[in-house]
Image (cartoon, rainbow, N blue to C red; front, side):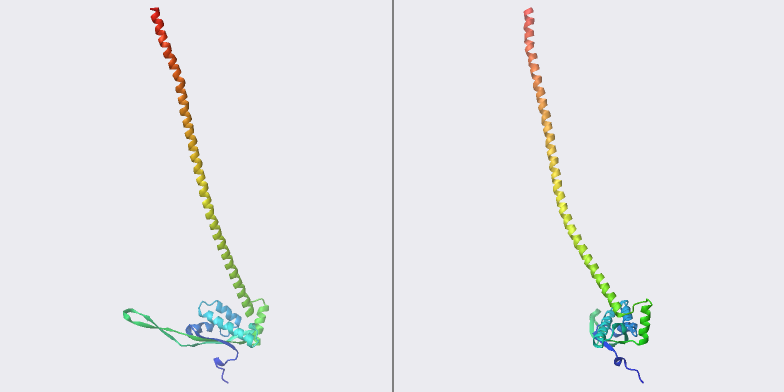
Length: 240
């Protein structure tokens, strides 16, 4: 009895057509998740650095959703029984080169298909035993819950950073107002210094007035001396 062909295997499938990636690059990632449970396949795709892993993850999520909605299967009992990538049309583009020449660029496309089906009872028993022993969860529901938790934490952190940035900008605006107030206070201090100079000037004027009074007091003494000198001369002449 011949085995069923890849495209004829029973199960629930999902496909993406005309993916803008070469089939050889997609096959390198598909080989990692083949014959793995859905939970393990999702973990593998999360840890893969190739860009095509994002597209394959979307196809896998679509296949799981089809199995739950159309075939009434539990997500934690599914496994990737088949996955493959067929070559699609190649887009021809040209790049200008030296001396008026042009070289061709081949932009490859491919069709990615993922088929999921319910695991055997033996495999399910192993997974349940591993869960009861306190090992890794290994269920699609647990992976989805962890993913939702990561997204919620990321959104909360983003909202917190936004609030801190707005508060920082608000504080900067108030700091600018305080700088203007300090400048006004500095002007008042300068005005006080000018008043102090005027007081010093008044003191100088007072000193000059006191000097004039001293001169005025000294002048009458000189006049009396002048008056006394002619009398003395007269007396001397009389005696003679």
